[in-house]
Amino acid sequence: MQNNEANWRDVRYLYNYNEQELLEWKDWLLRLQEQTREVCVVFNNNSGGHAAGNAKALMAMLGLDYEGLAPRQLDLF
Image (cartoon, rainbow, N blue to C red; front, side, top):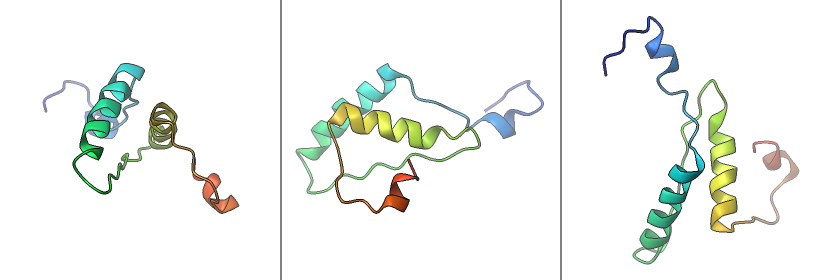
């Protein structure tokens, strides 16, 4: 990766998926779900805090709603 910005190493992982990108992941994950017993998705956290928002948006698109989470866990999202 070549970038002329002096701080490119500091910002290269600051990425927030847009709706279209998450929809593409949704379609891919639904196809993958047909081929395996369990699918796990991990969003890389970054200093911009995008991981939780991306995860919540994808969960909503997939219709996932987890019940019985400990109250402290809910603060993670």
